[in-house]
Length: 173
Image: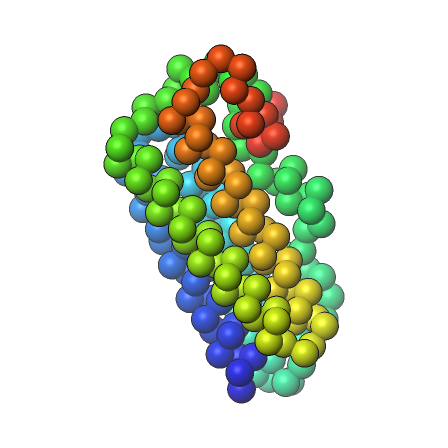
């Protein structure tokens, strides 16, 4: 069934993302980068687990999994993704940007864009409202991942005083 193939593709996409983020988090010396990539790897792992549950239910019953386990609303997603210290000066001191790290950020942004396209296409194809809601939820999550990566890349390229787009992703430390 096409829906099962889409879910399998989504699981594969999330697995690939998790591996990528774990690999980059181990290789970078930038503390902010480590935080970003570990958080994103954890998110991809959680998405993969939830998608596996959906896949098993679809295989067993032919129906979408009921309930909203694993879902956040947009506000909860943004709160969940607050991964930087509130002290921007502290972040500036931690920065250890090199071209390899900036390239990793660029690749990560591309991976998030691929995920957004995949889930957007899946949402367009499905006629089941629960499936459409799941795919659109994942689109929103991946868009926020992309925004974090873009903001951090911009900050790494120009951590000038007064540059504050990372504030939306800050948390108390």
